[in-house]
Length: 79
Image 1 (tube, one colour):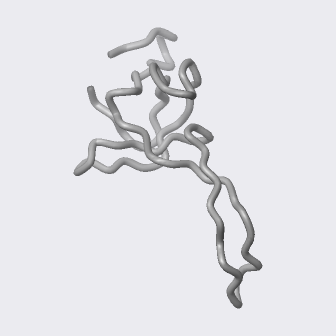
Image 2 (cartoon, one colour; image 1 turned 120 degrees about the horizontal axis):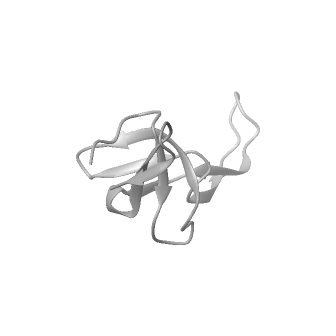
Image 3 (spheres, one colour; image 1 turned 180 degrees about the horizontal axis):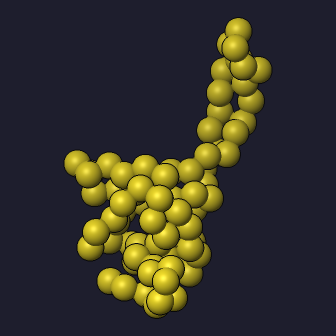
């Protein structure tokens, strides 16, 4: 399966099953992808001079076997 940054994918397993999103980042060594607004986690940040700190929500990686590529032109799902 050819995954590229910016392509649309659909999650086929896990807590976000059925959701679609755009690939933000790919880790080819670990076979994981980061998808926009999928697999959100809470991260605690210490305050620094630049930022105020606190709890932020951000995307985490998901294994590429748990996603399926979605073709935008034909509106069909490819595996």
